[in-house]
Image 1 (tube, rainbow, N blue to C red):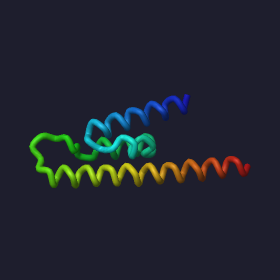
Image 2: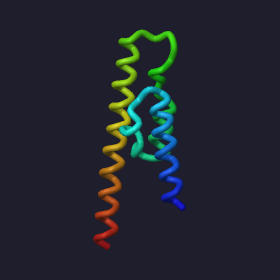
Image 3: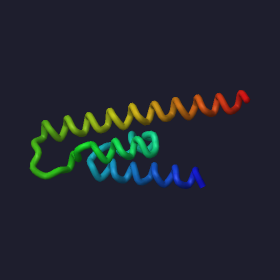
Image 4: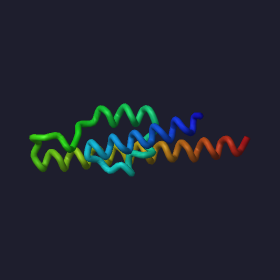
Length: 87
């Protein structure tokens, strides 16, 4: 059941990231619920009335945050698997 919830959260995060104008593949593994909360707090790239420079900065910041959170999540998963397999 946990795996199903995790997959559902990852898919929803990817869809929200894509809708906000970020790269979905950088957000798909972004740490579950904490990453989901961060994603919801980031300003959208696709907001009407913002200039191109602001749009680029928002996209870069959002993609950087997503990739950092995803890398941290992957490292934690690998560490957990290594820890469990050593028991």
